[in-house]
Image (tube, rainbow, N blue to C red; front, side, top):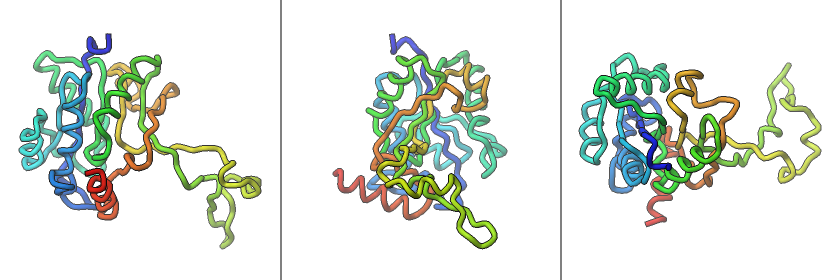
Length: 231
């Protein structure tokens, strides 16, 4: 049964951000950015617990207000160079002290506010029913890398060769790019690979309009516009 699995949602949210200062708590269409992710996680039929990992007291306060649990993150894991996988293992170690050990981790980044509860549940179902090692959300990339160049000795040189420039854009191979919204794996797989990416990673394909990953002011405005139009 799907509901018999202990599935833990981890939302990593540090206070520092160079591209868009304090973006995790910046007001987006009426509520803090992080609230959109917390609410979609809490509405899931499958999640056992929803935990925000942060070193920031204001983020922690807002996370609790919207119903998430909070685990305080060490400052050394809240820098620009800190690896998300280490944040996950810190959460797991903290929970082990209270005798709670999840079987599956779903990482939900707060910078993907357009990912809804249905996406969370469908991605979990997809993971559990397909015998994979992990699931990562992606969207179809409109700008094909097969038509990209590098510059060598001042001249444009195609990265994949000139043959692709004889093919119509719509006939080029479809390519997909991670959108940062959903990452799922068994705890054992994360411990083995130290990553959500393995040779048996399945894609959970999302439409581009739900794949905005907020990194700067333009991304933020785009997400706000989409949410306002939905309302």
